[in-house]
Amino acid sequence: MGGCRNSGWRLEPSLYRNKKNNHPIFINCVKNILNDPVCKKLLKKTIGKNLNENSNSDRKTLISIMRHLGLPTPLLDWSKNPWVAAYFAFKYPFKNSEKVTVFLFDQHAWRCNRNSLTGRDLKIVEINELEHLIPRQSAQESVYTYSGKKEIFQEFVGDESEGEEHFISYCSLPLSDQNEALEHLESMGISEKNLFPDKQTVGELKKELYKHVIIHMKQE
Image 1 (cartoon, helix red, strand yellow):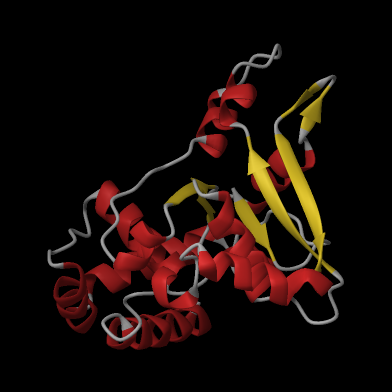
Image 2 (cartoon, rainbow, N blue to C red; image 1 turned 90 degrees about the horizontal axis):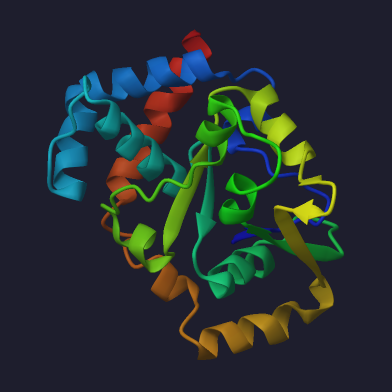
């Protein structure tokens, strides 16, 4: 499930929302972070282990952490919990929006559709349940989809149905229900306090990673 604070937005990773950003620049930035002594020290302090710059799985782990700290990445983050998705849609509505949207991606239907899938398709829609190393990832029941190229993801989200088979469903909800919705969600334990239990512990890491990303992107 995914929550979108503007019903007019498409499913597009934050990295590609800025035309100046691209995947190769981002990967170089990730490598530099994993080689930076200050970042390495803060990562170990925050997640309790070292990340190896030569490990593909460790790079993916770092990218997932970056996504949850609000940095631009090629990840779309989803939640296995529909109420969490609804929270993010209602809690941070886009300016002048009248509606918010909750998306449902049916991976099983996508994989089992009548048209055979290419290896590229399978890579795009693979749901990655990466290791949760900061508390908010577990609290939000996070999983991810990943795309190395903007146009591939655009094709994926633009081809949401084929014939009678639908792979992405969505529900648009009026923003006028915001207060009532958030009250109900809080009564269920879905609140900022519970979804972001690590605000203080990740603060120093977040600040350093932001600085590193901004410097690196400008250099490129």
